[in-house]
Image 1 (tube, rainbow, N blue to C red):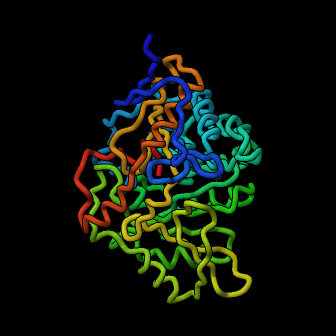
Image 2 (cartoon, rainbow, N blue to C red; image 1 turned 45 degrees about the vertical axis):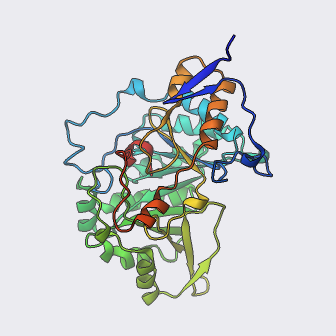
Image 3 (cartoon, rainbow, N blue to C red; image 1 turned 120 degrees about the vertical axis):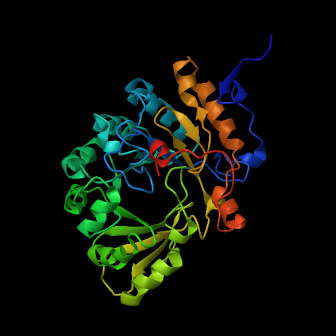
Length: 373
């Protein structure tokens, strides 16, 4: 009798636990991909819907009122998410980040947070459970999320000037409501808070210093993110990318900065603190375009409907939902996850850097709202 096999996307794997080559296992026992990167970080998209229409993610001319989002039946249930997450933790994942779309639009998300918070972390410690949000309803949700077991939040905020912010979110949403959400998260203890600003030259780069001024002195990590060619609908152009080095120069013209070491293995941000003694806060830059960090990438992404993506710039995912709903055992699903990760060789940003100013040609990339940032 032939051995039982399980299918994930276009791949077929033995259902029994695989024998992992020694070169693909770290000294700690963690799983390694083909470029010897461990699996440490799982990002779970809980919805593909969002109430903003930011041009770099969900441009309104594409994601209009006629756009078909996933039906609720296609979404992983909370129980399915927790089951899959538990298997990732067994493979070495130490941090889980809930994303979207806008994750706080998923009904009863606090219940999912409470369920995930029960999962044990590495070596019996606490799992690092975080969430990325546009902050639009965070003021109403912060205390409940903290009570459910959420550790930290990251808030996307692309401008402090209300007119610029409304123009960028393309939903006429006021910046004051997002700032109230950040304040509420700070009071609830969901910190240290990160604030992410996607910098687009000629659109909001004039907001770099105002953002630094606003958050300087608070226990907030302000991250400036280079405008990236994620997905296939945002009309990305290299001349709209403001290199992170220029961002740091602008901030340093007003505030003296001192470099900080990476906060964890695979840290995506280069970090600085304010040199003035006693001043809280820090800034960071995420430079996927000009300073690719693929060699340290330890992140996997689970889409809203249960597909496993190995890169933010991927074209295809591996269908874990089919295994979950098809009756596969935990051992079978874990085996599939392990083999998919072992074969991982994604390094899109490095290839883009080598190719020059144009993005590498290839298949249509998955949209960011579908797998999270």
